[in-house]
Length: 51
Image (tube, rainbow, N blue to C red; front, side, top):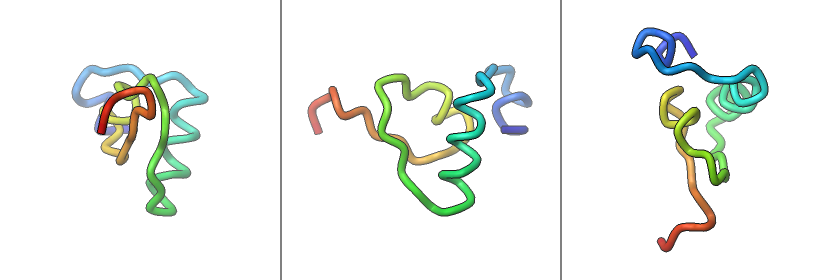
């Protein structure tokens, strides 16, 4: 989350908790709103996009 702040990209509190949990456990996050998770450096998948 410090990475996102350093880059000037804000992350909401709920997304921050999700990103921190995913990062600490090596999980992939599935979300339509990928920008906060990309900013946090977490692997993210948009299930509404074509693979």
